[in-house]
Image (cartoon, rainbow, N blue to C red):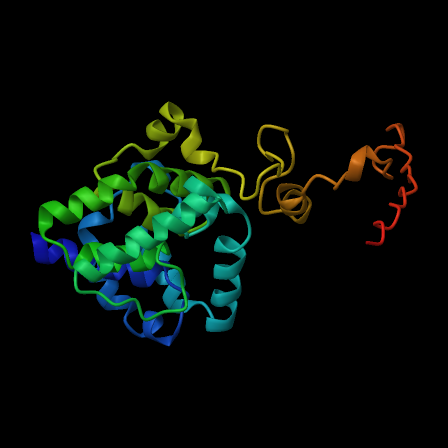
Length: 253
């Protein structure tokens, strides 16, 4: 059972990684490994079989463009796990340092340009752990996986089937229910202090250009309360200069 879980995690890591020729070449083998995870009543429109057929049969350049559009536009579908929890705060940096230490303790040396909280890297890490430890590591991110599945479902992305399969491996069979119980799973933290909350403000979906701009917009800098184009009614504080009092020279001895 442990070996089966390890192989499934590595297969799903490949499914979630940036698509290349290897993914398409081994799509049939990946499908065979993931056969036990095929059934999913929650997203019947997108199954693992249809996803893998899509990954195998789509022109590689088109598939890569689709991947970037899905996972690099919008925070809710980001594959960097700690971005969902910590945004760009200092806590995320420390969390990644701690995660790198866990990788090294497991005998892994991250050889990638991706950050350590990149989901495929985390799945590779889980795949080398003992069965109980692997399940525990997956359970640690179950709520984040539920949020990812919900976000992919809203976008009608075929990758929702893979996210749903990961949820089941993490012990969360009902990811829709998990999101309803914990709305924060589908509402990740703002990436920068003061940035706008797209969903609560009723703005467009977070992958649209307008919402992306709104999400990352920062409050205008207001020096000394001075008037700005965005705040024409603010009071203007006049800068006052006071002459320095010249000190008399010291008396000569």
